[in-house]
Length: 248
Ligand SMILES: [Zn+2]
Image 1 (cartoon, rainbow, N blue to C red):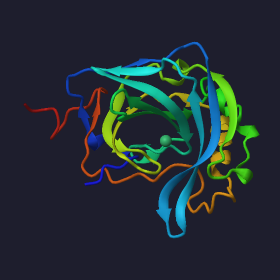
Image 2 (cartoon, helix red, strand yellow; image 1 turned 90 degrees about the horizontal axis):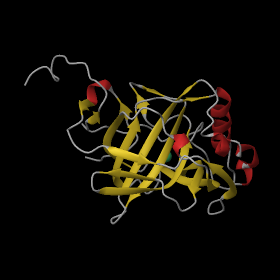
Image 3 (cartoon, protein in one colour; image 1 turned 60 degrees about the vertical axis):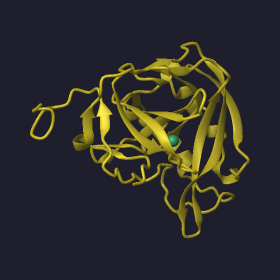
Image 4 (cartoon, rainbow, N blue to C red; image 1 turned 120 degrees about the horizontal axis):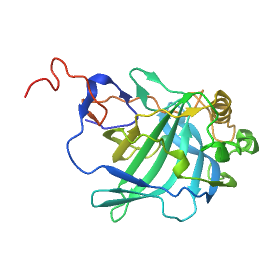
């Protein structure tokens, strides 16, 4: 069975985490310089070619942001956002999702960490990147010609305070959709303002004439994929009930 992402995180797919090492995030709190690019990625095939997926991609300067997980070390490579969210919770999308893309030392295996946002107050963590949105121009965005800017960003400021997560095996959500990706999605939903979400959505939903058609606007989120029986492990307390956790 294919094991593609994103998926709808539904209650009936949740199972308790097996005992074992947890991911430990070592992200610097002090702001670091970062390249911020507005670029077009390739999405799913369409009758006319492929869907165009505009993204703001942030590449921090070579640094020490990493996740240690048991014996494995994953280094942060880049991050980007989707409006609406790609992962759904219980049948609905959230307004915004952050993807922090890490690769494992040695074999390059992917660990992608998701943060889902709810509408609320201004989010200072994403503000340095989102403040650049007005300088990007979808009308002149072209393949292989990202629009480039720079910012200083606190990487630790991107993570929620709570450390509980959902974890499941999946894939990249843009081409080449490689599987074997470890997904970790935080259960806590940080706030972002309606203005921040709207600014991102306007940017990634706008026509990009030089990149081809946009058959699936608005937004830059891939559709949820068939969970194909996958379980989603979580350290959230789960209600016990018939069929789960109530018998030995
Ligand atoms: Zn993504």
